[in-house]
Length: 548
Ligand SMILES: Cc1ncc(COP(=O)(O)O)c(C=O)c1O
Image 1 (spheres, rainbow, N blue to C red):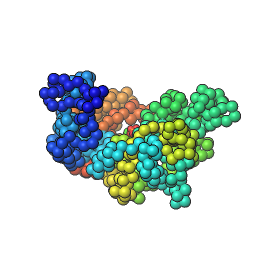
Image 2 (image 1 turned 45 degrees about the horizontal axis):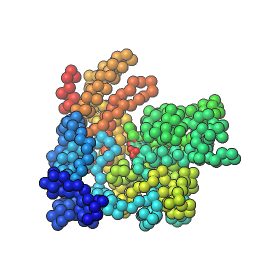
Image 3 (image 1 turned 60 degrees about the vertical axis):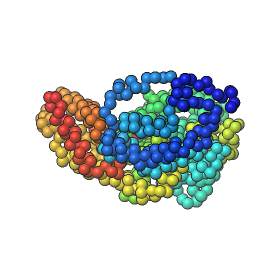
Image 4 (image 1 turned 90 degrees about the horizontal axis):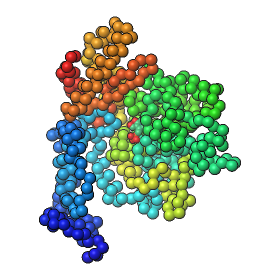
């Protein structure tokens, strides 16, 4: 045995029989230690695939009752043992029996609070294959066919958004110089990539200036005689845009929130007014981009994308659509028109781990112009050489896994129709849920669903009556009271662990902030019986509040 790699065996390790040495180390790179471990690992794989969620459903609900304090007390030892403490089979068993029950059972049909839900069981197979192959899509030399396949997947999703001609896709799909889109970690990085491209195209190289990417924002502002750079997005924009503006040197204080209309969509008149003010009164201000949202995080609403696109075209401004949530609605024949106008966007964000039902995490950004990402191209001597097919040339991310293999396979397994059924179910169930809420006197529907997200709140009958007959000051008091009720009931329901609805605070101009319960209907097993149970539980909890 190579002495260099031999570890000193402690008395404890000798007793448990677990030792780290060169021989055992080599074995784990080849196969399980012995036949018994092989059988155990296959059994656990089966349990992960088919038994885990059933077990959680039956015995745990949303999550097992245990305080965070109590849980964190168990995870305070920061020392790494010198020798192995457990075999893989024991580790897996420990995760299944001890960790999973305290994680959150996002697969439960009663978990309707966030944009995270059950995934089809085959996703686990696909994710396992991705780990087993361990391709690195940064370059062809570590991914080969996967890079080519990824280009195909990007073209398929690009086509869902832009629907260009067959000739367009034939030409660009495998052309190394064209980039239809890029996989990144998540929606946050997709938005960042879109604004990165928008920034670089806004401050391109010119005489005596090498471009913002090379010289930085201060030099770009000087070269282009700009004092300030802004982006405009509705008040319901996702906070990832703030991060992006921070990272890109634009400054997150330079996001101009555009007012929303009564339906929580960007008020197009307000957008035009904001732009007119900037154009007429602030010649040193450059509008970097306008962002439309296709499925806002809080209310699920879709901005008037076509109209925003027209405004952007008139003013020559980059139009980005954050369709992290709503993008896959384009797959539904029934509801695809809700996203009309997205095809006019210069760039579009879509999350695979949202309505493509992929495991965490898969962000994507698409560009109408296959040359747009040239403005963020990087080369290195050891990879991503000029002219190569390496996908790392035009990508915010360096090393990354082959999530495109999961999405590409999922699309083949589901077909457009499979995804459409999921989208339609979400939208239609949310609409029926809204009607149910309207019929229950204890509740008030606050934002009706356009897609599959809605907000509502507990608003007891007597308080509704009081609200109608009272003035501004008293209404402020009532809002505070209602906010307190809704926060408390949401918390109680979460802690009870049978179901989960999230909460958020809606800001409305000229009125007080209101706390609402937010539900996201994406699990195909969430039906009206489940939703009735959830309302019943909230009603039950409300009646248990002190002094109501
Ligand atoms: C509209 C919208 N954009 C962007 C994001 C960011 O996505 P991620 O959490 O994948 O970074 C979200 C997340 O919920 C979102 O709802």
